[in-house]
Length: 223
Length: 228
Image: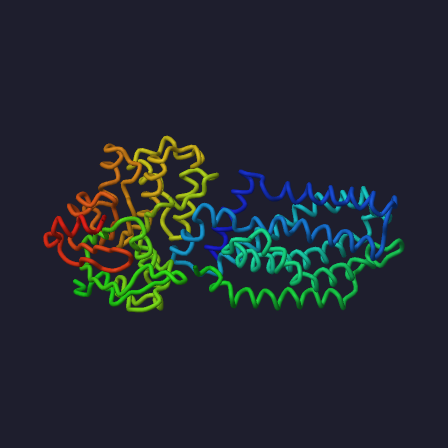
């Protein structure tokens, strides 16, 4: 735990110093909402369409963060330095997933209000607690699977391509569950709580990939 | 005192795809001794250091470091060795102090040790500047601090004095030189300097051992052949 916190603290400090990842993710999201606004040729959207647009945009923005997650480790020898330390290697998995989760939370603090302003018809107020719960589970899936995929991709020459090629198919079930869970929340006269079935599927998907990542991550760090 | 060698290699072999980087390498290094690994570029020196550092797996043969067989017991030696390679293993957007505190926390070292070391290599005054603003020589001094931060028993030194002027070389000498008391494995493109420090010499050519033994037994012709 101490090692994971140490790596997480370093990653957050690096992001605060460079502002390389989160601003790019946020800018991408806002730009995508503007594109949807004109491409759909509608002043507002709601329900399943709104949930689909929001979730898809967040997923593609997350891919930007996923692609950059291990760049400093690869380019500046962070992998070797970490591997030389007498710590459990899964600390890197925990730290990287936590860092990506934090980046996604910051992204959503910017992107969700921008989405409400540019596209969403119904008020964001009533469904907000339910939406936060859905996005927290979605972020966990993006963070865990993203860390796993990024750790695989970083050792390849075509790392910028490998991330989306492996990551997007793995994230499709999470995308479906997130969109289906958020759809009723964003409907014109929607419910205040997300459907339990889709929340359960999302939570199960998070758990399965967390276990898979824990089991294989050690081997992914080997040269 | 532990009579076992600090490093024991028997038939070590490592491939990279079709290419064999190390073939049937055998050598023993007693505790506290210095092994100089000599050879031209591509001879396999850095590969050997990375295997000893547990960063690469051997494909054949037996490797024992500080009494622990690798790679099976790699976790037992990781905190006991210090690697100083071509890459300083420092984050360029963090300061020297932040980098060293990061490594100190990973190795469970008390934070005061960071300032002690920066003082010793005369980098305390620039310890808060981002590493990317430092000269190569300054970067090497900070990298030395990183390598010895946790007081390792074994130092793996790949061209340790590269980019250092004579004054800086004297500053780091107590940390990574013979006076450090560590068992050392060092590579150098300056064979005479490496031989002067060595207790055991390993000559490599295209991954094969051309000489293994005391420095006195290495003839000038053998040395010339190593770098031919």
